[in-house]
Image 1 (cartoon, rainbow, N blue to C red):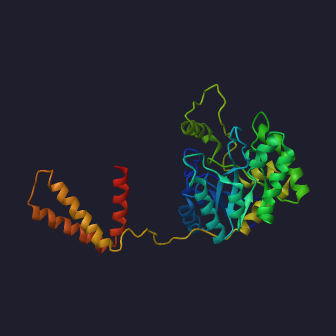
Image 2: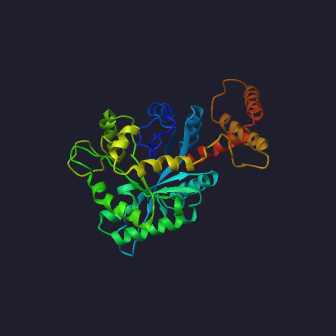
Image 3: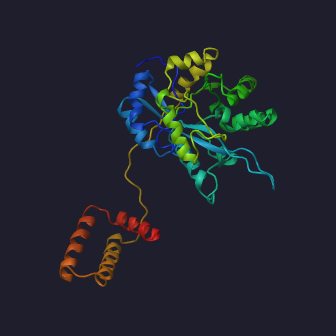
Length: 354
């Protein structure tokens, strides 16, 4: 593996970006080794489901895992009667255990007290939980980029200043280039100059990312079908729908260096960011809620009540004493393994579902 990397992927989506990402997390270490990249950031969309599996697999292969998340942000305050504007993503990377804890809290903010609404965090929540997190501004489809696309340069600058206030020197202006036959996609073309001008005017470093959803370009068609499944759309439909491009694959360092040859600092900052991150999720014993003061007694009570209820309505294949002996044997196994609390919690889920 290269000792002096030129580029490291900081925005990638595993299969845990549900119905969206197609990178197998267990294959990521091999992909990094093949590409000469000593580190990689995993930034699944609005979840951290893969954090532990990713950390263990990467560290076991001698590659540095960077735990991140692509988080949707409600960046416009909607006035009464105004149509809600969809949230837009930023990329957050954990520098330390404190950053990891804040990232988990923000993941809770995405879903708690939302009443089934769109998963999003507010700017206030982002500011309150910004410690030890590196923030990439989200590229052309991020909150600043969406304002630039709408011709709202002053609002874009104000939002950038607010993010800079929250993250300080941990904020990076994210640039993406996914060129196809028709040139650069319109959102990237409309925003790149504004991004660069703001970065230089506000003294915020640039960073280049490739938004990675699949390993190789030849997976584009299959991945596009996956997106259609997620959105209830058709590959050949005439109506507009969200489309990625064949460029959203795991590019090599050489490919990224060619793509950003005019902005070498945007490449080198990917390596700087990797050096600033020094935390991986670690294995720990499961943390289960305490279901009862005496979980053994409670499990025995519920199991025996359940047995009596079943015996009252089923034909008996053996004597009642045999049923009781079998139950006592099974309960003894559960207690010996220390699982009464686990079984009580699962039973509670099942009862609620019924």
